[in-house]
Image 1 (cartoon, one colour):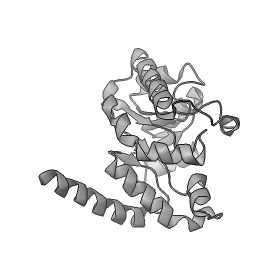
Image 2: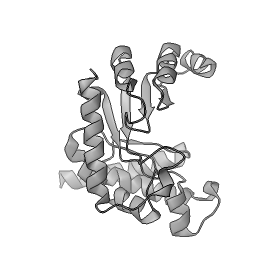
Image 3: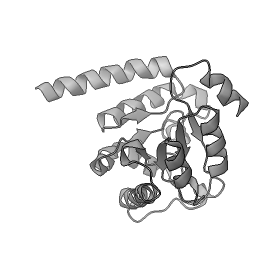
Length: 203
C-alpha cells in the first residue's frame, strides 16, 4: 500500500492492483490505484464486485480454474474456449449485478492460468472469439511457461522472441490490452502489427 501511495503521487498512468481479496483492493483504491485485476473473476471473494462498484474502479475479470495454488492440477477441458467464455460471461454478470458499470469491465481469458501449453496456444489463437462479448480483451502471455515449453527455453528472461510473437498474435486477434515485461520491444512489435491491421481494413 505505501508503494501504491508513492507511485500515485509520481506517475500519471493508471495503477492496477492484482488481487482477489476485496479488503486489499479497497485499501489499494484508497491509496491511489484505479484498476482491480481479479485473477479469480470474482470467484474467490463475494465482496469484490461491491468494492469495485463503490470505488468506481476499473475491473479486470480473469478466468482461472481453482486457486493460484491448485490451478495447474487440472488443465483438461472438453471445450476450452467455450468453458472460458462461459465463465467470463458469468463473471461479467456478477460484476454488473454488484453495480459495476459494464464500461469499466475488461475480460482476460487467463492465458497461463490453469491451462496446458497447448491450451494456452489455442486461447491465444482464438482471442477474437472473446471480442464478441463486446468488452475489451486483455492478454497476458509475456514470458509465460507455455512459451518456454513450446520453444524449449527454460529461463523466462530468454523468452523475448516468443513473447513478442504472442503479443502480435494477441493484437491481430483483437486484444485491446496486453500485459508485458519488455515494454519498448513489445510496443514496437505491436505498433507494426496494429499498423498492418489498420491498413488491411482500409483495403
